[in-house]
Image (tube, rainbow, N blue to C red):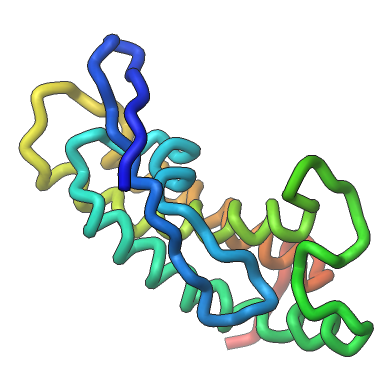
Length: 157
């Protein structure tokens, strides 16, 4: 299912409103259209390509955050939305951080696709390695925060 919106150029942009069921019931289900809109994906990016990137990112983020799930489940919270903290509407800080990590990882994975899509409009900066590195850093920072780790870590090789 899709919902129309309009880009800055005034051209209609259709976002897929398909739900993405999370494999870990602690974390919220996601919405493909929310990802497309919040991360301003090019309108000509095939929805299936975006969906696959989100599914892959969910797997990576869920694996990284397994200790977060264990921590909160041990305190009696079965879902992230029930964890105490700042809240607005149907979102709390933990679910917002989760979505931020997943969506940043998914967009980072998609940056290579932008260059291969035939498009009429230019998407400046979308293909740069700096953008990809920044998105991966954003996801890593959010996940480190969720894991209660310091902003920067030092590891021996």
